[in-house]
Length: 209
Image (cartoon, rainbow, N blue to C red):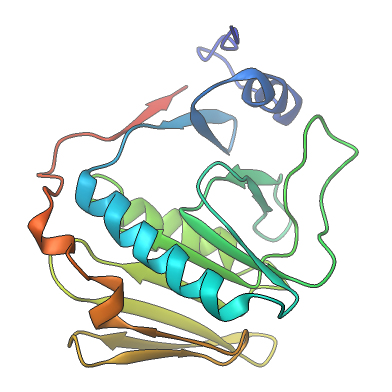
């Protein structure tokens, strides 16, 4: 069983990585703190399954791979220590790049990152995570997928420094992911989702440190 580092003090990246390697939970690392991501709702899981199924079927034999929750991604703000996040879904193309010099493997070159929003994590996903993700050189698209209603917020890289934002809110809408040659129809993403229980604002993310 993994022994959590003393979170009363600053946790180093090495301490986090050692703990995370042995832990059964999803853990993120942010500025010396370990953040544990706990269980999600049935609706969250169903939306994620729909997203995964659609992307896997389109990317078969295309040189890209779809990774589900549990994979860690390394990201850093300019001139800051690297932090580690566990996205809901990642698409990676070409040769996988990792920080293999550290304990375990953390991806360095995602092409697309998807987060399914929860009441307790939406601000974190839109704010802190996006602040880090947009500095990943390989990242082309960042999708924020709502649970309570059909809505996908999309950031698409435009050149080296800029990102374009658009929001799709109708079931007839289709997300065009030109970077990986895929489309996501909102009707498919939300298939059967609104029949499943959603989170009601209770805490699903606990921060330590």
